[in-house]
Image (cartoon, rainbow, N blue to C red):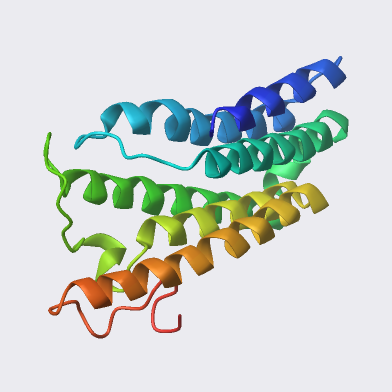
Length: 199
């Protein structure tokens, strides 16, 4: 499902770009790093077997990822960032947010992965990292990461992706949080769903 995004992004990025500048290449690398990890590396590292997923969820995810890859790839193919953009406060702030979110995301994924061993289908409470504060630290990481992307690119395409990421992940986090609290009687009472101390 996730592979659609880097493929569509790269197709439009390279199809439209006859002379690719350094800033656009750097942004392309950030995008590809996230999605190749999400679509290839992460699934290969999972243990505990695969779960059934409705076809409609898969189709909707492919459509969303394709549309998102198109919007951002198309935008970057037409963008003309000067090299000086790398020292612009918006790029620097966005870069810090992006790498912070990516780090939180990767660390949280690792914690979730280690909850299960091969053949284990049970559920456990994630602990450590930002899971001390929220039920869905991995979702928090994604929201921060793509907010950073919106800031780094300073574009409507980036802002649109950050907005829709939050619209998708916040309700899912609230649902997961409810499930954790209903399933585990010893679930940490001060833990929030996705934003520490707030939601």
